[in-house]
Image (tube, rainbow, N blue to C red; front, side):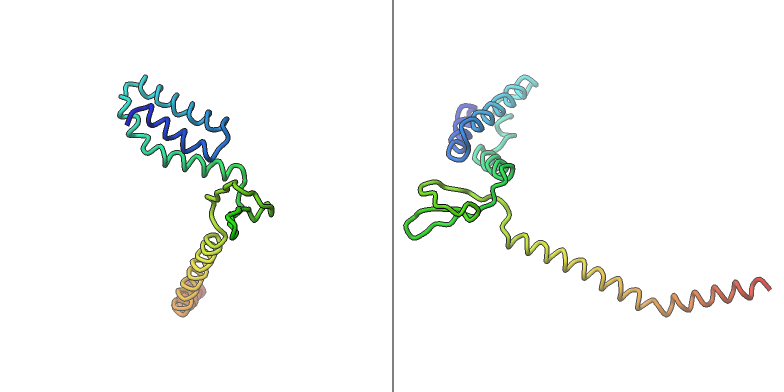
Length: 152
């Protein structure tokens, strides 16, 4: 892949998702990055290979942009093909919104998994304490007895 094709693919993917100012900033950043790496002694091919797929880069930029803008609405498409978002509550015919964030179900599942792990850890700790309680109590009694009778 050449630098021109890399930059074109990156720009094409970003154009449909971000405003033109953001697209220009990101394209400029990667252009400068490639220049810097070439000035540091790497070949253009090495730099482009280290960057990876421009489509994947664009997707991560779009996702980060969506998170930084605080957008978390889900896209709903009705029977006429009109789209609207749940957080705005209005129809936006022909405008496509993307939600790359974590859905409510994933958050709920993650919280339940953490809760399960915490409860499991408490149960295991309690069972260990219960299992060793007689030994600990007898040990404490022996230590107290040795201390009491050892001083006489």
